[in-house]
Length: 209
Image (tube, rainbow, N blue to C red; front, side, top):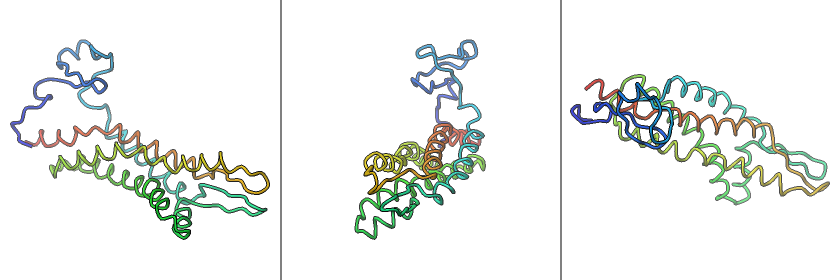
C-alpha cells in the first residue's frame, strides 16, 4: 500500500457497518449513530482482536470433543453403533460413496480447521504488525467469512437422518453428543470471523508508512 494513498480514515470519515454510509468523524462525536440506519458508528469494531481471540480459543477447545465423540448413534436389530465424523467419512469411502465422503470431509473437517488456522494467522499477522501481502490476507478473510456457514452440512445430514430413519424396532438413528459441540464450533467460528475487523490489516501498513 502506498503511504500517500487516500483512505477514508485519513479523510476523517467513518464507515457504517450496516448500511456502509460514510459519515464525518466530527459528526460521530456529536451523534454516535448512523443518520441513515441508526446503527452505532465506530472507526473500527470495538475490541476486535480480543473478542476474536476469545471466540477462536473457545472453538479450538470445543473442536476436540466435536471430532472425538460420536455424532450419530445407530440402533438396529438390538445392536448399537456410534460414529464420529471421520468414521462416517471412512464408511462412505468403503461403500464407494466417494462424493458423499468428500462433501462431509470438506464441510465438517477441512473447513472448520482451515477457518481456525486462517483466523489465527490473521490475528497473529496483525499482532506482529506485518506488511506481508495485505490483499491476499483480506481475500483469505473474505473467503473465511463466506464459507463458514457451509460447515453446518454435517448437522443438516444428522437432522435429516434422525427425522427419516424412524423404523421402530428395525432401526433408529439418534444425534450423538458431538452434535452440540460441532454446532458450537461452527457458530463460534462464524462469530469470530464477524468480530474480526479486516481493516486492521491495512491500518498497520498505514501507521508504519
